[in-house]
Image (cartoon, rainbow, N blue to C red):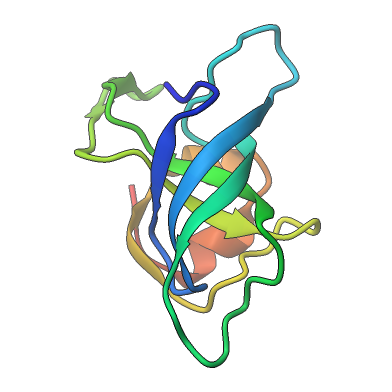
Length: 123
């Protein structure tokens, strides 16, 4: 689960490397975010490039993997070694052109279908 102040890794090629959670954008009363939830993050580390797609220090991100074991509706369990996220814009489209690793199907159920289309694997 992702709370305020949690550090996350980035799983795409937008130019960011490390993120820190500032606010959880949940519609429920829970204070923690899980897979598929959107959060507001501050960018802690950037990859130095000539053309970076990141313009500001804050952005919106979607959580893709969490360290805690999450049970899916079909009974399978998902567990990752890192907390990871993908940066998105206001139209729920990713800022990057390539996503590394897998993306859970729960992300598509939240309305982020473009992430599934450019991901390597969907589980």
